Image (tube, rainbow, N blue to C red):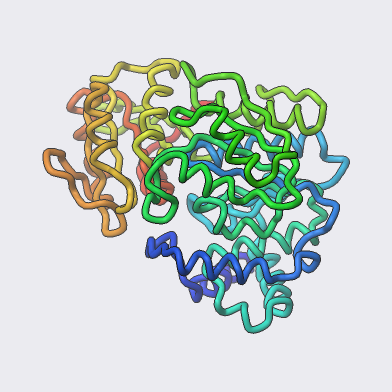
Length: 411
């Protein structure tokens, strides 16, 4: 029954324009969407007394959101449930909406979509795929008694659908040059767009250290709209170790500050699809093994952070024995990522597919349907670790590789 419901859910969502796939982002479309979403009665979507948190930025949004939700669930469970909305998904769209870190059931989602259609009336059919999922999260969190609701923004902040949650707390992760045609062509402009999610209910902003933006610029950007907001900066830089541990510590800093409690970051939940590592046994006729690691790393700087993290993992075989398989969506600078990996000394191959960036000159390409067959070849060439990164949409190919061999997961 759940699989039937899931099929119906996907069919319903696919009736709506999916900008994540078309990448057809325009100022006009986003501004129209903002006005439409703000016109929806807030009391219909969420309880007035819930703590709503928006997480904006270029890199680190998803893992920070996930870890923070885990801390609230673990330490504040008696107060109520914790809702988490993230995007994009790895395999199933129901991953995007979680209550206490459990994916929603498709049947439950269909029930709330029917309720949402009643509330929004004629506007319902005009919502995009992402807008509809955002509103679905809002209404589901309300009826699941989610006293804490965490929303990872999709694009920017000022015009992002998640602005409907009207957060009391805004969390800013790393800001990089991205979607420059929409968000602006410099870091300060992009910062302003992301912090545009601040509203008249926002009273606190937590900031991760930035590479190109100093604290005074961040303060001025916030104070220009809401001078009374309390601003807290995380005074720890990502120098070595895993980026996941860093984001976990940042989430713990936010949780401790908001709740005036103390959580233990080491007890946080493991996030699927982030530096996910497995051992492939019997890859060839000689019974050889190979390490395989997956991470989205969806832009060049995220890839750099990932590669810097990988060299610190236990048993790292060295850059010359680590093969990087990567690609990104067409609107990302995949060439910069490929060149960066090569400059760090890693052998690199570009993954090719209709929905990914075209092959860059000077690099070898592997088609998605060929990856599993090429793994034994990589082993014969002396590689001991293969890293697949660049997009959540590659995760299904990662699992396809794992399905062809016995898996021994690394905890």
